Length: 409
Image (tube, rainbow, N blue to C red; front, side):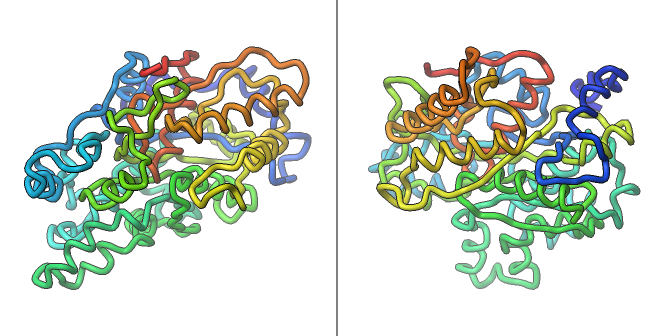
């Protein structure tokens, strides 16, 4: 049991009563705004932040976890070698990389070494962080097996390099190649190996994938499609292909750093990692004396629609979705004390996001002072896992009662 788990004592009766006020007068009246408890967390983030406690230390220390691509990434090293060690896009060799992504204990999950060899490391990592999140939520394998538990995980279809490398080498193709590389199998494998019978959904909505996964998990719980859920995302950078494409779109920072809200912001840096949270209806979590790390009072999703470009944000749409989330939560935007933002460090995106937040707060009446944060300043842009990294940071902020600093500001 890690330090954070040990710190999560049973709630006092007074605290429970405060939480019960969020439930409204009738436990049976489940609406689209019923509160959802976060009861467990699992993570693998850059900078050896492979537990919630280590992640929190990284944040509080103001650590910059970005570095050069590890020497054991053969596809990256081959690209650098072909480019004479100094590619035309040097920024792609910087990132938030994880060590040891080839390490996996297949026997622990009842998987043969042959099958594990053909599994995308994103599948392996999703299994690990979901297991650890369930463990922190004090849910055992015996309790989970056969339960109506949902799995909602974000992953990018563009990051299917492990499968591509196998099919390009015909000698590598075998009976495990298809299931080992299929995007939909990332959540399905969690459901299969743990015996979970609730919805099992893979989502690719680009950088919002893991937060859309959380939103869908909350809605599934409110609609009683499942009784518990694990939600999050995973993102690994196994080859430089996508980085080259993003560099040529001029999305990447030439100096390989995310500098949210800073005058020197010039793009983002790609990173890898995975995160998962266990979610339960608040009334069920209270009844079972489950650990409660935070409460999701409301959420919302939408799309930019006809902005000034396919990849460009739309300020009006951002205002709309934030208003919807506050409305679903029954909370005034003027009362919010902290916003963990998308905050990529791009000249276009950051001002639009900050202006949207400022406008909805001012429209809601006299606002209290508030703080803005972006975990990307520490660990870069995790793409399919970016949102869950931000959510886990916010959960830890609530638990510890502190707001860590933004670096590069």
